[in-house]
Length: 315
Image (cartoon, rainbow, N blue to C red; front, side, top):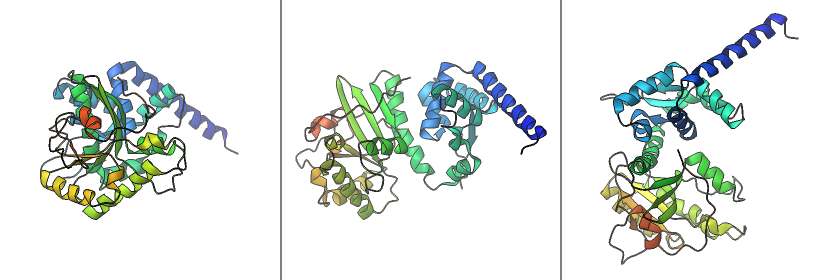
């Protein structure tokens, strides 16, 4: 049985934690809460990404994010580089996890993210650059939307996208793909819902092309009545034109390519917005013109069925 002193220490710690949360909450603006939730949902965002999402000035962003770190709402680290210095990478802090848990009425929902072992593993992960690049894809769209260029109606990361797919009734052991993200982009009265494969150039092309078998399984499996919802455009974003050309040949050689709606592009989303005329359909030999993101669905084969809206990305 726990001693009275042990119980008392636990009670005092709980009160101190509650006081820290209340004190931090008093300092937070709506923008702060919006950015903290985005960090939680997408695990890691850089200074530049958070600036693009909510600030007009990088200096203002740095000062404000520094404050959020000091009060425990966020944590941050800088990955080691052989040359130069990396930007700050922001993670959810313990106070931020408590605040979001209170807002969601799920006290323990965000706590796993603030475990030290998980955050250290993420800092050292070989996939960190891939995660950052994938997030830049959607951040760039969000920045374009902030400037009046369209609307990013949904942004799901890898885990949320997988959850959404499996919620269609597929079991997690069924060998289905794990897209890097799902988005809904609207511009000029047009809307596209897409799955994203963000390529850093390190994956062997046969392995990249092999993913199409799993996507074809999503598109053609007849086990579930609602399978039509999974025939979404699949976008491949490559780091260079040379990589894109090689990858297109590998993808076109797959027997599964004809079952899918695929478009490719080569650009750095940190520098170039994905909304522009960048996208080239894969299975259209006569289509030599790149199209805007909002026009990709029209350039590809007509959709066979409507999809459910997976959620709205709103400030």
